[in-house]
Image 1: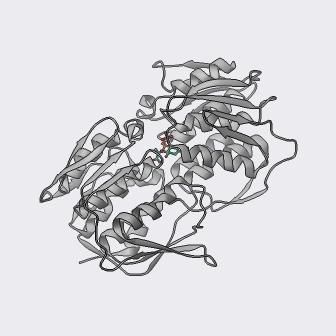
Image 2 (image 1 turned 45 degrees about the vertical axis):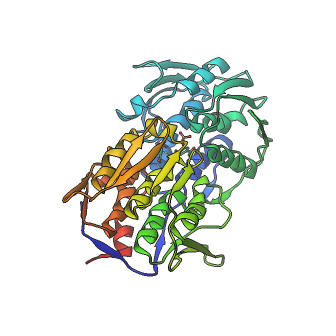
Image 3 (image 1 turned 90 degrees about the vertical axis):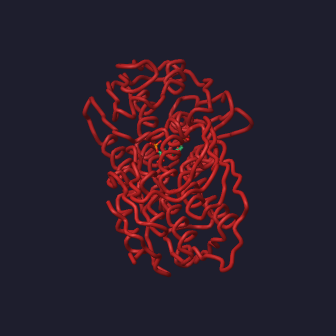
Length: 406
Ligand SMILES: O=C(O)C1=C[C@@H](OP(=O)(O)O)[C@@H](O)[C@H](O)C1
Ligand SMILES: C=C(OP(=O)(O)O)C(=O)O
């Protein structure tokens, strides 16, 4: 899809649907502890796939590229007594690790077999009653493994205690899980390297839940506002968010002068660029807590030619693609020479963008959405633009709504 050189239109309103992470947690919890009537559920493909899986009686469940669905369903089917499930996904999913989660579940007594490569999907899972109540699990590969166990913890007779090994990655996602549990009445304790989930008290549940909109999706509008220096209004956002990616407010204020002003009555926020903002000489950030917005930030900084050093990114290698390599390849096309390590990306030099820019997207929705705002600088092609549907199916309509080509 060619994005012509564009400018931002001032003051447009965009409604983004519910957080994919919150929606996916609620879908699993609803199945385990009683149906939850959800407002503003995410319309992402990942959430739709999870919802369909939970409604399906088929033996084979294919969750395509949906990482959280893959991980959350592994524990869910492990305790689904009497159900045999073949849980599989896309080729990429078959190369995204799941061993720490499967090891933990097996040591709790679950019956899980690898059907192809050891340590990776597809899995055969025979659901059974889990009697044990404590397990060790490595916490530095993906927080989704821990969330998966936490979600079923309250369903086990004696609850579940997790002993986390190694550094904890993507921590706000764990805190989100525990806060949602608390909202439905399941108590937990998280101190140092131990997470304890108490058994679910009988009858505790929530019937209705209004999901706040997705902050990772909002990040692309922060990037547009930062590059285009015009305002955008987004709904439905609250000042207090369960999502770690809401830190985008602070990051884009500090480094790009984008002020986030909330309208409480409307549940909306306005992104207002500070006039005459002085850009920093260097952006130095650890994004271990918010890995999904790293691509957004790297593109904004490159578009504005602000040098950056971003650390804490070791999980990017095992997401929809190796995001560090993908970023390095594609940033070069828009004029950003970078150096990458296993957990870091830093800019080295800004050069002229290519004459005919064509951004490869590597089956990764966030590559497409993160690079789109560069159209405010120069025309570019986004290859396989449909990838956005994984998290934000109407992204291109919304992008068109706030921009006009010139
Ligand atoms: O729990 C979640 O909803 C998520 C956790 C994060 O994954 P990792 O913990 O693997 O970094 C994040 O990248 C993903 O998009 C959603
Ligand atoms: C990493 C992501 O998703 P998942 O791991 O759930 O596939 C994402 O949405 O950026």
